[in-house]
Each structure stands twice: as C-alpha cells, then as structure tokens.
Image (cartoon, rainbow, N blue to C red; front, side, top):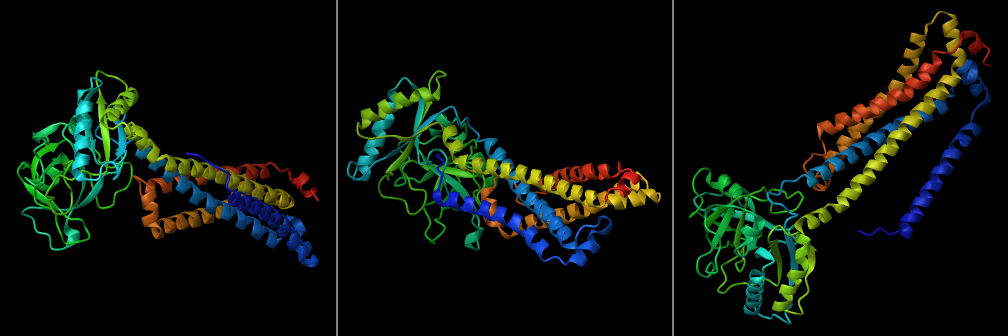
Length: 466
C-alpha cells in the first residue's frame, strides 16, 4: 500500500487549520468588542465570569466530549473488528500452502477444449514434481473470494424465492481437499469421470450436511442451484461426498450466507443448465502443498518452472500464501483502525485539557467567592463538591449527547457501517460502556485537579486577591 500526499487534501487541511486558528482568535475579540461596560462590571464583580464567555467555554467543552465519544466508539469498533478478522479460524492453515492466479487469453486458448487440455497438462506437470505433496486447481480468487447463491434441497418446499437458503460454492479439481487438509468424512472425492454431461455431482461440507440433513447421511441426496435473478435452475446435483468445513470466503461480511458450502468439479458450472461439454474457465487459481515440511515460499520457483513447461508464455500473478492474500485484504481496515485510534486518543487529550482549562479559569475567577464562603464557615469539602458539581454537569451533558449521537449514527447508517465492521455490532453495548467509563474517568480527573486546588485557598489571601 502506497501513501501519497494529495494536493487538494493538503490544501483543505491547511485551510481548515487556518480558519480554526482565525475563529479561535476572532471570536473572543468580537465578544469583547460588543460587551456592555456596565454589564461586564456587574458580571465581573466578586469573581463572576461573564455570561457569554462562560456559555461559550462550557459549550466548547461539551462539544469536545461529544466528539470524543463518537471518535472513541468508532476507533474501538474498528480495532475490535480488525482483531476479529485476524483471529478467524479458517479451518485450515493459510500459511502452509502456496497459490497463484492464471489467465488464459482467447488468442492462445480460443476454445473450451484447448483450455481444458492446458489445465490437464499443468496438473500432470505439477503432480510429477517431487517438490509438491499435492496440487489442485480452484475457482477461488486469491484464496479469498469464492461465490455464493441460493439453492433448493430436493424434498423441501420453498414458497418464495427468498425462502431458499444461500450457500458458498467453489469449482475444484481432484486433490483439492488434500491440499487444504480437509478430511473426507463420508463418500468419495472427485475424479475425471465427474462431468455434468454424465451425472452432475457435488461434495458438500459438514456444515451444509448438518444444516439440511441433520443426522441423516447426505451422500446420495440431491440439491440444485439458482442464480438468484432468474427462475432458471441448474441440474439436480447428487452429493457424492462430505468434507470437513473450512471458511470459503475471506475476512468479510457476507450477508445472508453462513459457513455452509458445496464444491463442484472444476469443469462444471455451479449455476445454470448442465453444459453439453466440459467448461474450462479462462481464469483459475493453482494451489500446491510443499512436500516434506518445506516452506511454502520455497515453492514459488518450482511452481513457475512447472507452469513454464506447460506454457512458457503464461505469467503467474497474485503469487503467495493464502495468509498473505488474506492479510492484504484487511490492510485498508487496519489503516482506518489506526487512524481512528489516533483521532480518539487526541480527542480524549483535547477534552481533558479543555475541561481542565475551563475549570481552572472558573476557579481563578471565583477565588474571592471561595474566600468569602470559607470565611463564613464553608469547609473544604463543600467547596470541592460545589466545583465538582459544576464540572460534572458539563461531563454528563457531553456524555449523554455523545452516546446518543453515536447510537443514532450507528442506527441510521447500519448497512454501510455494518459492512465495514466484522464480528461486532455498531451498537455493541460493551463498546459504549467502555467509552462511557473512559471518558468519565478522564473528565472527572480533569475536573478534580482544579477543584482540589480551590479547597486550598486561604480565606484572607482570597479576600485580598483583587
């Protein structure tokens, strides 16, 4: 990932900074120029702060707390989402195999037969190499993006299209489950005789079998697929095997699709009518498992060499382990999480400094008042409680507005925000409680320091302050 300085963004940032500095300087000056002398003298007597100044400063503190809540909630949700993405159990070791993508162009491979001939030749070259324990081809893009769609299980009734469950799918060659380390729980693997023109077949994962057939055997049962947009369905596929479940998609939210999935032979088509001849896609991902505990990264050269033997002009791209591709898929979210975290920390610091500054200013302005009160018998505890009460009102108002606004934003943008998060809700109660606790503690500390200082004012010194 490359970061470059964008001229427009830089100009907007500099402009916003200039405007903020200008406003922060002009606003107090404007308020002072419009002040009535008699009102100022009245407000300033005996340690009172001008009403307008007090309103503006307290409003800024409340605004800081509101923004702190929103930024902290966003940053915590993003960080939790990233942690969830990095701790996914894929059901296999994504760092133990090597994968690469290929694209067969029409000029070199104009027909389905020529593509199939190449893929068969490539598999023979790879299987004859002593470097690889097992090899296979799959339709999965970079071992991250698979596919999904609605299905119908034979014997079950579906009144409406939305009643049909969705399932993940993948086109694979024989040996795929050996590379992935998926165990065959029931039935058999694919073989070269499995063509849609003969008998459409499929292998399902354990989650699929459990969801649709319970404790009954899934082998021999049938289902068919639909493309979700037309009423035309694919052929009834006979289940010939059940394998352990692995995650067939990357670290993303896939609405309305769970971990259930099925596999069809590589030269089959998951949706639509059965073809009269084998269908070989222009694009495929080759995956290899190294032999004898070799590092997957060491397989890059042997893999390229084997592909060159099958076609010296065919380049490989997206070469790397599935772990590498999966990490790259969440890189953008990781950057966003770091940015939100920095913004959240800065917001907490600014809110604390703002509250401390306002309370310190208020305490210094009320020095004579505190002296009079203490001279008349008020103890330090009462002075402390009075100052804390003033600060906690601002904190309570800011927290209330911040949490309510955050919840409102999460509700209004539930679809967009939900797609950005993984494994955590935008309205997660734990996150809101954590932000409430953190902001409350930091804010109270910022209030307590000047409040504690107010209790140490000596009455005689305070009365002589002005």
